[in-house]
Image 1 (cartoon, rainbow, N blue to C red):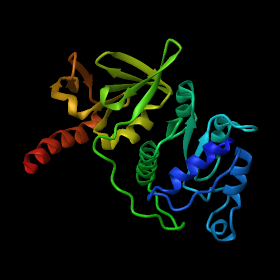
Image 2 (image 1 turned 120 degrees about the vertical axis):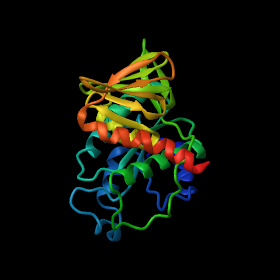
Image 3 (image 1 turned 90 degrees about the horizontal axis):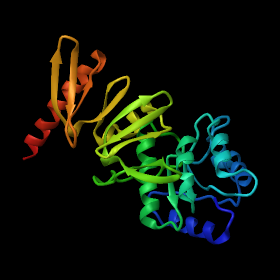
Length: 267
C-alpha cells in the first residue's frame, strides 16, 4: 500500500509479476487496507476465522495519511494470525523502528524486482518456520532461499543507521528485550529479543548455547570441558570463550559432530 499512485502501481507490478505471488490487493492508506483485509470478496472472507487477515503479507509505506505504517503494524499485531509485514521507505532512519514493531523486512525506495523477491523469500521462510500452511488459495511452490542470501540488521551509531550483515556476527548476547551483536569490529545493541534471532537465524547456522548466548557454529573451534561445565571457543577474529548451559550441551555436540560428517560425506 502506498499513498502515491506511481509508487502503488510500481509495487503492484513488482509483486504481481513475481511467480511467488498469487494475488495482489492495493490500497492508498491503512484504513482502506484494513477494510480489504477484513472483508474483500465473499469467497476469501468466508475462509478466515474471526479477526484474522485474509492475506499472507502486507507491503506498506512507512509514511501514509491517517494511520502511519508503524501504527498499522501495531493494529496488525493484534490479529489472531497477523500477516507478515514488509515496510517500504525512502528513509534509512526508519529501519530500526521497523524491526521494533515486528516487521519481517523493509525495502528502500526505489524498489526493484530482486529486492522484492528477497523479501518474499523471507516471508516464505518465516511461514515455514511457524508451521505455515492453511486452507487459503493455494500458492505456487516457492524455491529454497539462495545460499548467499544474507540478512542485514540495522543498528544505530551516533545518529546514523548502519547495516550489519548477519555473516559478520560472531555471537549474540541477550540483554533484556535487547540483543548485543558481537562482530570482529565491535558490538552493537539492537532492540530484538534473543529468542527472535534464534528462530530467524537457526537455518543460517546460529545455535543457542545458553540462555544468554547465540553463536555462529561455523566459528566454533573448540568445545572445552571443566569442573564447571562446557564452554565453546570462537575464532574468526579475537578468540572468545563462552559458557554452554547443561540443557543446550547435547544439541551443541550433535550439531558440531553432524556438520563435519556431512561435509565429509559430500566430498
